[in-house]
Image 1 (tube, rainbow, N blue to C red):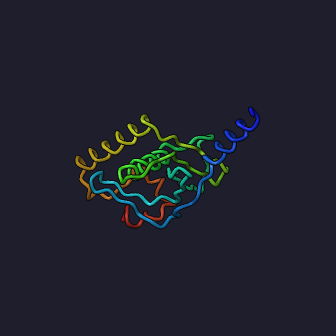
Image 2 (cartoon, one colour):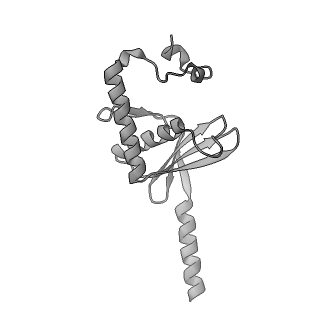
Image 3 (cartoon, rainbow, N blue to C red):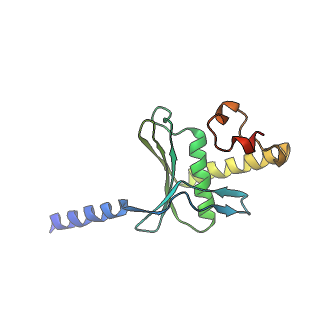
Length: 153
């Protein structure tokens, strides 16, 4: 009887790892209340209906870790989708340059981190004015950015 129970538990755990792609780079999500919008590269859903927010990057990871700006992109997308009623499992950043998949947990600590970043950005926008148009202060990031013409005219 014990081997059967272990087999059932093992199969159950495997089923929880199955995820299906539900959208790929096509839908823009918005929350006027949070003043956030996002267009995730990919959303996957597990068998319990929880979402995995995935961003694909063509470059390399930072020594096997996600860059802070990429982590924050995923966390703010998680925050946004959760505010719209979705249940979030985790985030993920996939780096094509070194084929690294970085898992980003979604829990109370990460939610607090995302909310603090969102409030900080709103504070800067209020102080500096939203009409500046600049997303970042480092022009080095702009060279490969597809939005550079709109952002830095």
